[in-house]
Length: 279
Image (cartoon, rainbow, N blue to C red; front, side):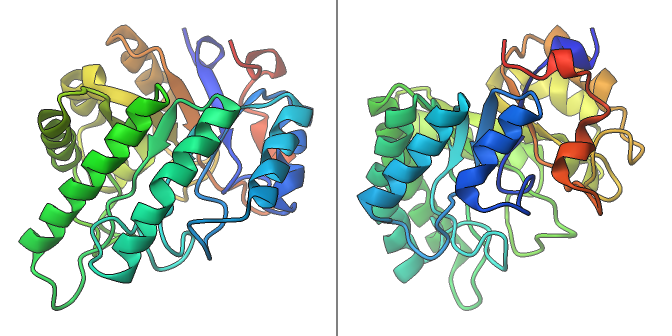
């Protein structure tokens, strides 16, 4: 048990950001990792050129890294936005324009998990109207994911850092997952369980794991406080990951933490080099 018993991947949108995007897969590989994940890399556009998509695919392939998770277009992230799919008007349209682009790119690199960030509440917009729009867009995303043999992820964030994001408790995100699965009949919507965000919400992490491990499609970690590497805060991450495994979760654990003041490559000393390659 313990860290060496897990399947880790590196989030290249929060780690190795001192490097240009196309150099990050090789940097992760040099640190010993063979699996990576990404937020939508082109925050300005949901529909990048084929040349840009091809260049990212080549960078992943050349490094020998497998992309195991990809966000759909989510607006300005990092930045003020927390997704686009529930935001009426232009942002929702941009999300829809991105659905097939993201799914096709994921298929081209063998990525089988697509994360759809819900989006913030908008002043002047009826929350029920936003939720109806969200369900409509998530159904489209779930069908696109199913077309390529992938799962659709719905994520809980935390209220202190994302006060306008409505899915700030595990039950809220799981409720959306259940609604999407009921609407599509596909069963491919899953919960993205992020231990950092849940801890920031003050949730009972062991209880969340017991309740929702069976509906969990992906896990992300960072320590708390600080959102740093394991061991920089007080979360019992090793024990919690063991609990997830005992509850039947055998999927990826994304390293979605900030490296602090040091280069990203130096932030992995908590994990033996022999435990970093995908298994």
